[in-house]
Length: 317
Image (cartoon, rainbow, N blue to C red; front, side):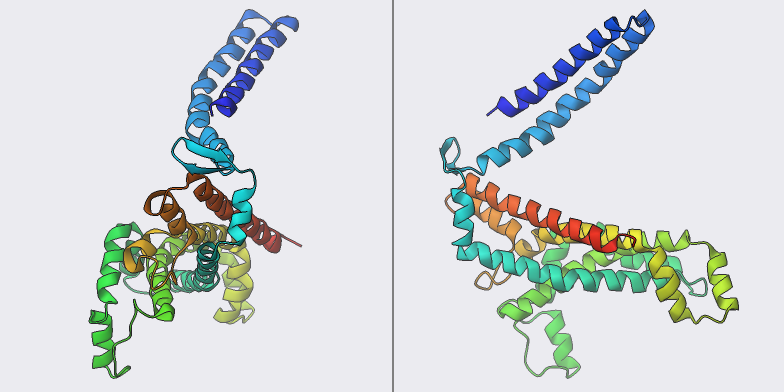
């Protein structure tokens, strides 16, 4: 189990020895040799810590994905866990739910963040700081606290149904938690409410760094504010849009807290996500850490593929 880690440490130590030998062969002065050795001495503790707490767990989890069982009772199955994925209806359901949240929620959140940041960047808007704080505040709240709050708000007799019935929008309460469609809508509303302000800050800071003379020249040429937004602001924000889209994609693929605390994956696994399924495989069902590790690498695979596609689409022609 410690083989990959020890191998990595061995490579580092061999490089250290090569550096010392190379210094001697090149007849460097004593100060230069001292500098090389101390450089490795400063780097080595950080390398050991990164290897121990990051590289080793990654390598070990990849090795674990080729086993099946729990605890130390693990049986090598090779790619058997990968084959099991395609025959696991719960995994396929969790995968489809995760992509539904990804395809619907991420574009809505990015567009909403972009629109809000454009409005809050206007110098003519009063109380801009207050509005910015109000929109950004949800992303610094506790995940569990706001999830429980949303669960109570969207309960059958919660404040949302009471408001909708009081205004006459609906005649009967909406089963937010009991209906598969409305349960997904609740999760999408919750994560959009929390993370829109987070992405808005990136757009807002980028907009404030755009040279004002560009907009001044556009106004002199008679370009409307809408055209300025689509033909000046959006193209100049492309790196930030790419960054927020990639980070939001990764975050949605790892969606866990909201689902666990609001719907618990229900009804009938209709809001179950990949991260929640990994948790269930590890701690709720009969533990199978090897299969759970395999599902976790599915998230890594799709995160890498989607990030590569987004980088390719957004690259300059």
